[in-house]
Image 1 (cartoon, rainbow, N blue to C red):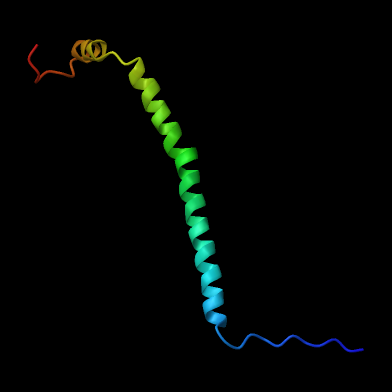
Image 2 (cartoon, rainbow, N blue to C red):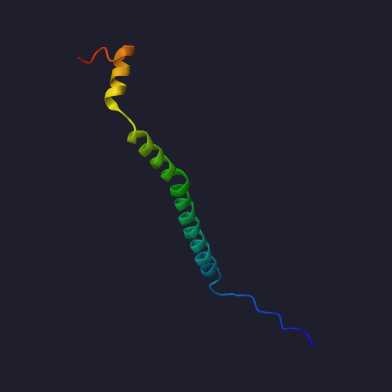
Length: 75
């Protein structure tokens, strides 16, 4: 017995392919955006939070005054 060969899709082939490609593009964009948030933005936010949690503005100003960096600012 011979197998029947499936007929090729002659109509709406471009539409079907574009739907799949658009869906794949949307999923890829979402994954890239979410991974940037997780691996880039969140660690930077945590680093800034950690830095400013222990940052003493008066101490840094005193260090800059002693180094002579604030010559134009009145004491």
